[in-house]
Each structure stands twice: as structure tokens, then as C-alpha cells.
Image (cartoon, rainbow, N blue to C red; front, top):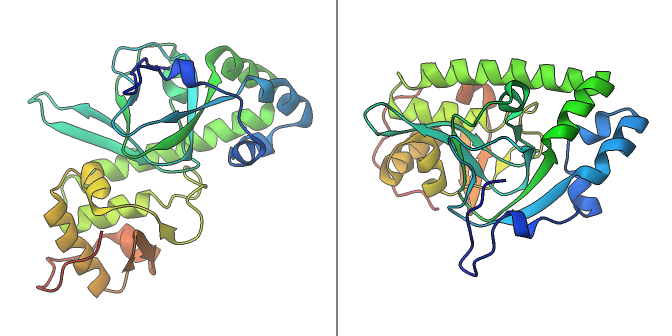
Length: 251
């Protein structure tokens, strides 16, 4: 893991611990393994609590772990040539990432930063490669990951060309991908408008306007501390115009 430090000076590496039973149950690929493969790899999994703003992965850093989100919210980002930030994806609970970098054994080409206090799991690189050699079911899981992620990034490229309301709608829909982010579950996403603004690359005020427009079309319902999806296909379609005047949404 990267070596940022908390205010008390402890690096993420120094905070590693064994996962508890609930945290192990939150790892989606673990339950899909052959029993022998699970017994072989489960003892190698570690977790750590990561604070808001910490970098879990840094551009140019070595890929020592395959990472997954047990609890919290992260973002995968980089900078454009002109220096402006670009966010590739939000990473809610259940999301595992970095398998392409591990397979190529190359330095990270993106940053992974926490947007809120999060619990992150890690599988050491050597154990990741061992599973690829040992488990057919794990290989299927990784192939599904690649397939879904390719679709996600193609959609993200298209989203950059859309109006802000459609960008917010498509970004929300992406966080409800049941293959990439099975830990989200149901139709309620715990996210603040500021966190969503970080992911979409818009101001909090503009995200507020977009959410009101999307709610007016019946695709979501704004609730305290989060957003409830009412019509996921409509979010994926992203056909939303500018919002109407109205009271500010909470969050």
C-alpha cells in the first residue's frame, strides 16, 4: 500500500490487520472460489482503515496489492495534460480494482484517494497471481471484471460530452453496477452532494441542480444522507435537460 500518514503519524501499512468475519463476508469473489482456493488465499487478506483524503495508490507507485472496498467511498483519478483533474470512477463498497496493473506488473497510472473514512481490503500481489494459476473460478471473476470495466470506461468517455445533468445521472448509474460494486446493494446509495461533485467533476451547486432535475423526472428520490434510485434505466439513458428552479436538495 502507499505510505501516507494519519495525523498521529501512522502509515497505512502500519494499520494493516486481519479482517473480521463480517469483512470477509463483504468480499464478493471470496465466496465464489473453490474451497481449496479459498483456504489457500483467505489467510493472506488484510484490511486497513483509511481516512478521508489519503492516497491508497499513487501514480508511479508499485502494485503490491489487489484492493477492494469493504466500507466507504474512493475515487480513481488522474490529471489531464492541462493539469485539470479527471475522475475515471467512483469506488463504492464491493468494488475491487487494480487487477490490470497487477497483471502487467507496472507502476500505477492513476491515483486512488479516499473521499470518506473507509475500510479497504488488500490481497498481496503474489497471492493474486497464485489464484490466477490455481483457480478457474477466480479467472472467470477477473474476466467479468475486465468486461464490465471496459463498458464502464467507454460510458465514462461518452459522459464527458454530455450536459451536466446527464453526466450526474450516468455517474450515479455507474455506482449501481451489480458486477463491479455488489456491496452497494438495493437502491439506496449513501453519498453526499460534495462527494458526488468530486466524482463528476462539477461544483456542488451544479450537482444540486442536476439532482433536482433528475428527481423531477422521477429517476431518483433525494433522502437524508443519500439518494434512492427509482428508475435505473432512466439514469443509464441520461436523457435529462436543465433543472427547474426549486428548493435546494439536502446533503
